[in-house]
Length: 98
Image (cartoon, rainbow, N blue to C red; front, top):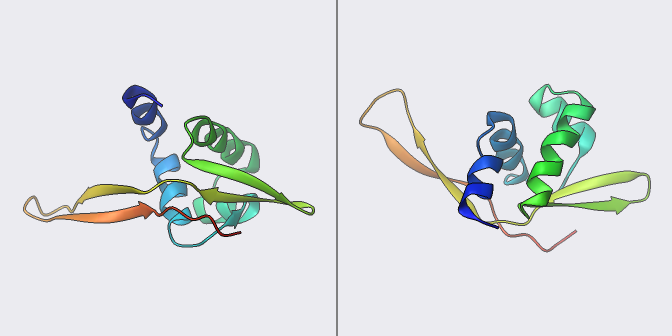
């Protein structure tokens, strides 16, 4: 994955939100991601396609469900509305458990 591919994958606030959510749990279903982000299933799938293509997530079939899991360890720097406040927040941790 090149830097430009990674930057493009993270250019969407929806994809950042999906990665942040996946950083809080081992796996999520497509429905859980849709409910948490307020996005339709087709839109979630489009975002997941981009994240999967860059290797940031993987999809795992479990019976009738598709589980989504972060495969990355990424930190983002969040700038609070106060210009002097910056903090580092993990977005997703490497997780090999399913």
